[in-house]
Image (cartoon, rainbow, N blue to C red):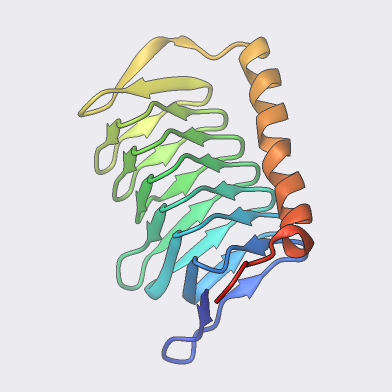
Length: 177
């Protein structure tokens, strides 16, 4: 694990957040309380700033980055599936979900409870409205919004990662070196 300063900018890791030993977090990065940062994740605040809200999960091999002098801002309770790439987004609002292998590109905005399907590519400047689903390459927003049952199910999934952030510090025991 690398949690490091870069050119005088140091990460701030919130209370109860867990960063996996194989993840890298460096530079101008703020990680909120009780987040779970998975194996192989890279959160690079080397020449742009990254702000990650509370209770987020950044699953295995995700990349979060920002352009020089700009900022990637992520709300609370946001879930990033395995291998997602988040690059210089303007804003990802609370409870959004970015599926496995999806890309959310420069200056994009995801509304509250917006969902980006697995493998989708949200283009530069594209907006996914609150509660809507975007799928495909390039991503197209579907007419049907997510329902209350979907939100209830995903709220429980999101709580699993908050629980993992609490369990990992004592439960992670490397075997052999």
